[in-house]
Amino acid sequence: MRIGVKISLALRFFKRPLASYFLLFAFVSTCIFSLLLVINSYAYQMEERFAAKQPHFTLVLNQDRDTWLAFKGSTQLQDLKKSLENEPNVVAVSEFIKVTKWLRLRAATSQISGFEKNEEFDKFSTGNVTLIGLERQLPAVIPLSQLNYYDSGPYKFKITNLEYASDWLLNPKLILPNAVLDASFYAPITQQVSVKQDGVDYKGQIKAFINDYADESVLYMGINQISHWLDETDIQETGVYIRIHDTSQLMKTKAKLQSRLDLTSHDWLVTSWLEQKNKQKSILIMTQLVAYSLIVLLVVLLLLVLTLNLTNVFIVKAKSLEILFMTGYLLTGPLVFNSLVASVMGLLVGYLFTLYYLESMILAGFGILTPQSYELAWGVCVLTLILVNLINLMGMKNRLGN
Amino acid sequence: MINASNKPVIKVAGLSKSYSISGKHTTIYQQVAFEANAGEVTLIMGPSGSGKSSLLRQIALLDNGKEGDIYYRNTLVSKLNTRAKAKVRAKELGFIFQSFALISEFSVLENCALPLLMNGYSQAQAREKAQRFIHKFIEDMDMHKKPNELSGGEQQRVAIIRALVHEPSIIIADEPTGNLDELNANFIKTELRRMATDLGSAVVIVSHDASFIKQADAFYQLIQNESTDSKSCLVRCH
Image 1 (cartoon, rainbow over the protein chains, first blue to last red):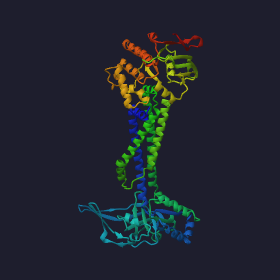
Image 2 (image 1 turned 30 degrees about the vertical axis):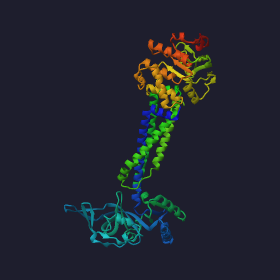
Image 3 (image 1 turned 90 degrees about the vertical axis):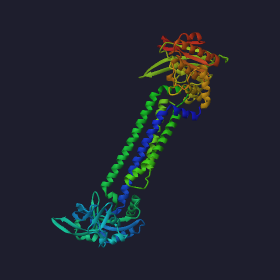
Image 4 (image 1 turned 90 degrees about the horizontal axis):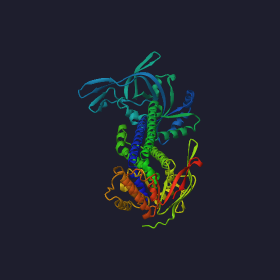
């Protein structure tokens, strides 16, 4: 019997089961491709946005505070900073102090709407604020009364007390230039600050950048300024901050930094910005886990449905299958070939549908423009395809005996 | 008319069939031996449960038996692998069953063309030859009808066309008149006789219908032997 005839006969005989096989595979592969695209886009968005925050890496001595003080007191810290600054991907290096304090920050902005209605409101959180001291000197802050309006569509915001931190913007070798740009709304502003400590309130003016993240308010200050009004006992963490050029290879850079620091006699802990943001990271991991679980569930369901479908086909077509076997037509080969073709076609349709129709929607949903890799999705789909066709082959061999 | 050579097309020796259920071993028949010659009608009769259909399936290479040999034109076929057996079935055998055994998904034409496709014909050649055969047997048949749109007699005629369209050397018929009225049954009997005479095929019929005895060149009976724990054995009656 000619191979073409064998295949076309199997196609003719199993037209409907093969069509449902194709549709099912197209649906499942679309789900796998789009789900993994969603999770990749989410991870990309998380990493891209958080990676853009400075500092990219925090280097902390994983030893007691005396070791750090000894390290700082010797020339080792300066040597380390110099050697890190010589790294091609490193832009800036600064030692830092990190403290969490209860603060009340006040800085009012007023909004002028189309109805010329002025309204003042408080922009900043009150409560525990993370204070980070970095760079030796607070850069000069100068008033810039001409730029005290911020346009946003039909609204015009007047930002009171706006000052222009010229050094922060113009000196590219500082650790936090993006904080100035990111925080265009909030900072640099002269703010009123209250520090509640041992029943004695400190009230005064500070000059700092404030990033009011969803989960945490961070106040960046010069390291000397922060030392003026904090005790040594307040300081929870000290070490070195690093800002890098290329943020797309964070983990690679981290591994490089870690291996370099492993050569020193101290135990250094290198963490990226995202790693310090446990909440965001755990949400990312949870979302990934949910997506992977969904994919596993989908694949298991697909296998179940296809197995049931196959069983049903064998029950419904038992008589015809027997006749074909009797007349010398061995179905397994052609049928497995047709199933393979149907599943490959379903997979391709799923991929093309995701690529040309869903991808733009998903990327727009996450506000990213960079196309995401489909490597993992292809891996999962091809593995599913092999698994399904293997089960199919075994089922047919078992049932048809040839 | 093809000259019947009286040479055995099928030769069966020492054939046995048994099965086990829950460890209990049951033998249906044992030491069956018979021959079916080209151009002759061979009839096998026997009571229900004696194993007639099982014997026919085994002779047609549809079931495997552990004991005994089956020869088609002096070639041992019972020891072949599944693929080789399928090839032998496609080339050498034509089947006619009580239940007509037509593929419900295929049209009359496709059902009749199937054995030709199995034997290497192209789609066009197979359809053309099948059409000729259909016109020869049933003049006003709509070849594009599905089997379930046909009467029982029409279905059995289609089954006969399918059985002989590739001119097989063996035709196996299992209760071929079982579901038919007298008129259609007589037509089938005549056609089976003609297949043997005109095509020179060895026609093996399993039936309850005693009227086949008159047509048969060789007549065997599967009888249950009391001395061997009710196991059936095949006895030639004429």
